[in-house]
Image (tube, rainbow, N blue to C red; front, side, top):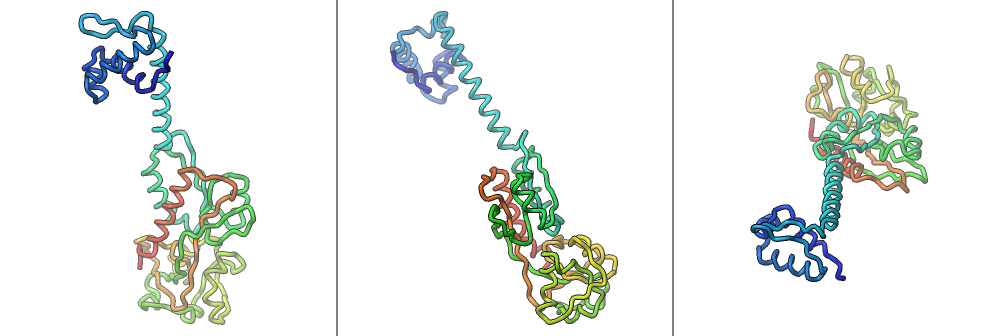
Length: 302
């Protein structure tokens, strides 16, 4: 006995659903004679009568009832598969977990997540905020798929991919005597109350680099752990600071004035992943969105 093809199954089902050759042809978008020939050929090759002709209608024959039952099951499975694929494309019943350094989480993460949500409207997103020393455990224990960090992570089990190259800039409170200058120097800032992050911290080391390279001692009047803290202290008139441009990448920042510095200093942003762990489509798409938003960050205020 010849095996039945998927095309034959499709045509038989169409005739079963519509009850006529012309109806099946319309459903399939093909010619009626072609459907008629294929039905006849299928019955002859299988040695079975699939349909009875009653008053111009094609009615499934009694002896072929088991065949039609199986065809219904096949298409039910196909519909279930399509439903599962549709759900996956929207992110239903799946989760994306990732983490970010505080500096990127402040504004860039929300913009990236907005794009992720537009592509996967039902995806559950678990965003963690991590310091650099917490990154290795987070990834190696597979608590999330990737981390956006302001330094590469030197660990044999992890991979760091550079996403962006940004500037270190100065921030001052509105109305500060230096706020009218187009560009500032660390020599202008060294005599001001300086707020910052401990230079022993990897992020603190990056943003204090211009002072060190100018041969100036970094003397903070107060310190915070995160970039957001520095922004808040400056906004309330408690000092000036150097900070990465991603931490202040918002069009409007009331109370804060942003200025480029003459001593050009840069900060790189990385996507860190576990080497032997394959990323989901959601994670790969998300990393692309972070890359895009980071590239646009400098234009939001410059």
